[in-house]
Amino acid sequence: MVVPSPPSRQTNLALLLLLAGAFVTGWLAFGVEGSPQSRTVSVVHGILGLGILLLAPWKTVIVRRGLRRRRRHTVAVALAVVVTVSLASGVVHATLGPLEVGGVRVLAVHVASAVVAALLVLLHVVRRAQRFRRTDMSRRTALRAIAVGGAAALAYGAAESGTSVAGLPGQHRRATGSYEVGSGVPSTMPVTQWFTDDVARIDLDTYALRVSRPGEPTSAFSHRELLAMSDTTQVAVLDCTGGWWAEQTWRGVRLDTLLGTADRGSVAVRSVTGYTRRFPPEDTSVLLLATQVGGDLLSRGHGAPVRLIAPGRRGFWWVKWVDHVSLEPQPWWAQPPFPLQ
Ligand code: HEM
Ligand code: HEM
Image (cartoon, rainbow, N blue to C red; front, side):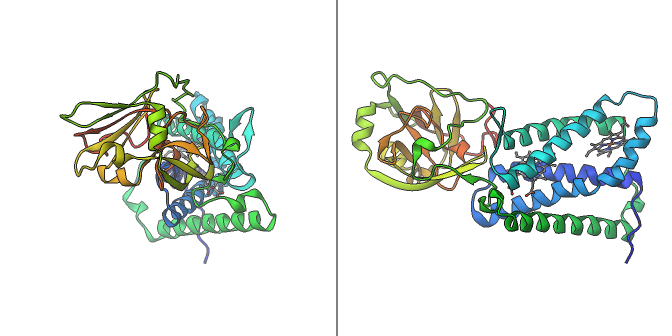
């Protein structure tokens, strides 16, 4: 069966769908934790991304024609650059490991260039609009879409097998795409936080954890008191959206011991830096406020004196330098899916 090559308009529209799909599944990959779901999202994400690469020969024809026209090309050329950087850094992370370029992780380059690409593609599409036509809903378009999707899936399969056969680090990555770094040896675990946050310095002598419930006076616990109450040990995997994961043995106080139980509202866990995440109230029995890891006190970079352990959730939920936990009336989902501050 020969599938005729697509006209320019359909190539551009396909690129738009693939870019949008890759962008959405990229953020989903950051949001989900749990093997089967994470694997599915990562695979779909990879296939959509490689689909963009496969359309490059057809897009090159469009680009050559476009560049010959007398008009400003700045946005289009900048888009080509950031999409290339995003594709290259995604593939490098998935095959060669959590590398750094000039102190910046390749995965961070991947996400940052994807965000810039998302903004530029909007401008590009406004300037170079392509209309969707009713005739696009044809058998021929469906065949083309299947051909592109199938070829991208084959390319993804080939990249995965090639990575294994060549013995590249990528074969050992977790379902989320993260690499194991420093399990059982907390001091070798990377120090990373959400890009808006910074390592906090806390004076242990004046530190107090405030615990509040509506209509009740706020209680406060010193570091010494929290250490004395740290009676729960938990082995949990911290899977950071920076592209690494580590399994450690954490020790601390269960949140329900401090806060009691509740069946409505949400539990807000706040850092001295202002960084906050909200959790469903029923989670208090699985959330731990850790004072120790691997038998030692937490280090400053890893959240001393107290950090949250949120098993089954990605690293940005594991609030560090916690100084306030409170039961509040808002539902847990009344927050941006990813931290904005
Ligand atoms: C312009 C949009 C994007 C494109 C075209 C794109 C493309 C890609 C490609 C081609 C890969 C390599 C897949 C493989 O070979 O296994 C990849 C991996 C990855 N991308 Fe993206 N991506 C985009 C946006 C994002 C965003 C916004 C995020 C996160 C917020 C993200 C997170 C990831 C992660 C975690 C991996 C590693 C997955 C794995 O190792 O299996 N991507 N991406
Ligand atoms: C991977 C994403 C994309 C890249 C890297 C890209 C890049 C480019 C470049 C470099 C040009 C030539 C320079 C210029 O016209 O100023 C161009 C032209 C063009 N692009 Fe894109 N583009 C992408 C996606 C899209 C999308 C999603 C649309 C619309 C839905 C689109 C529509 C067009 C049109 C209509 C032209 C002009 C062709 C002509 O004048 O003959 N492009 N693109």
